[in-house]
Amino acid sequence: MLMSENIADKLNDQVTSELAASQLYLQMSLACEAMGLSGAGAFFRSHVAEEIQHRDRIIDYMIESDAVVNLQTIPAPEANWKSLVDMVHSAYDHEKKVTDQINSLTKAALAEDDFSTFNMLQWFVAEQREEMMLFGDVVEFMNVAGFTGDTGDQMVNMDNYLRKLSK
Ligand code: FEO
Figure (cartoon, protein in one colour):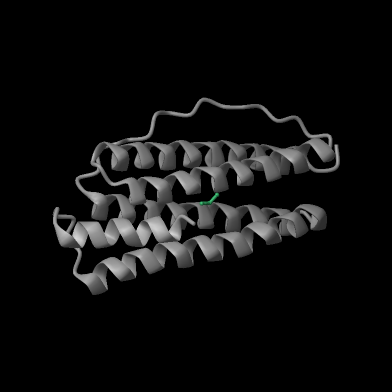
């Protein structure tokens, strides 16, 4: 195997984390659709595809490195968002958590002089910066628009804004 057990375990955990993220965003998309928000639904659905791409990048790297991937149980996402505002904040907080995980994984690779894994993770470091910028922009837009999550014109604007971001 072209990596230590420690790094393989951590990468395996990251596969689980990316899988869990894809479930979370799928649940958010479904919750939006249930509220009649097809733009927000499309936005979160497009993110499901991103998370699956993240999962597969790590899986492919592990396969190429002769590391064994073990899928783990993923608990159902907690779907108790009070509003779209709450959901967006929750997505932003989730991305912060994933950014911390990627940073910690990157540090672990460097601590072991595993430059190959460190190099592979650079893509994720850049990707997490983009994810933080994207969700940060949505939070900022909500704040500037004074969006409270109530139905009406503001909700239509927000739904249209998120639909554009999904393309
Ligand atoms: Fe896989 Fe949204 O980070």
